[in-house]
Image (cartoon, rainbow, N blue to C red):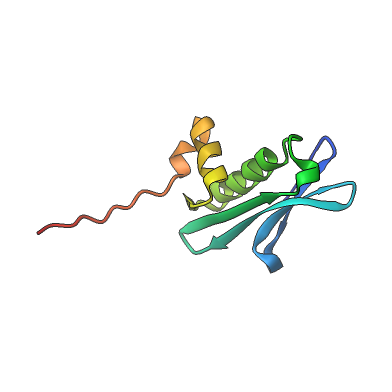
Length: 105
């Protein structure tokens, strides 16, 4: 999966368990993941200081969440950036993992 939006190229790097953003061949940022058979966890997203304000984080979030949707996975966003991005983009709300366990006394 590759997203060539403007000068930001997003690709999946499964050998490193992350999506990567490159600008002019340089690593601009990444969104780490842990994939299971039914759930993907996004624990950390990072964008290099020189690339902030260019939409890199949003493009990483969109690519990661679109990938989860394609794979039919629920998303547990422990990364504050991905979680906030999902809240601001309600079209991705149905991907959010919700615990279905119930506790009783």
